[in-house]
Structures are given as structure tokens and as C-alpha cells.
Length: 63
Image (cartoon, rainbow, N blue to C red; front, side, top):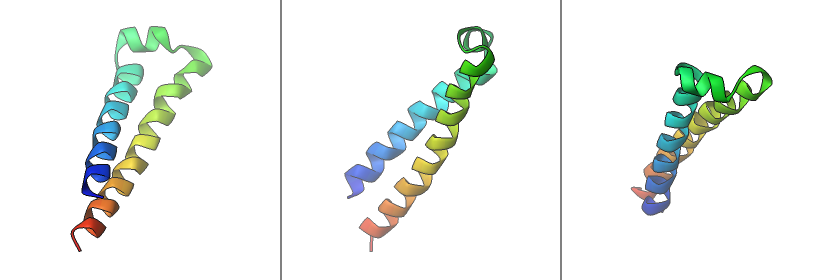
């Protein structure tokens, strides 16, 4: 269970980096223009949700 929590946390980190790149850098905004810009935004939100799930799993694994 701890391993799953750590893997989810790493996946969350990758998603947050991708979301930041897509929303905050010139190259990312050029790649994801117009409606395609929702992809990094949703990835960032889902990554935050994964962080909460990973924290919950890690907490439950330590009980």
C-alpha cells in the first residue's frame, strides 16, 4: 500500500510539472493553444486529486 501511495505521488509530480509547463511557459502555451489549453489545466487538477488519494493511502498504510 505504501508503494502504491509513493507511485501515485510520483505520478502526481509528473502531472503537476506537465500542467505547469503547459500553462506557464511560452513553449507550452504555443503547443496547447485555444481549447487544447484545457489539457494541462485538467492534468494539474487531477494531479492535485491524486495527491490527496496518495496521502490518504499512505496514512492508511501506516495505521
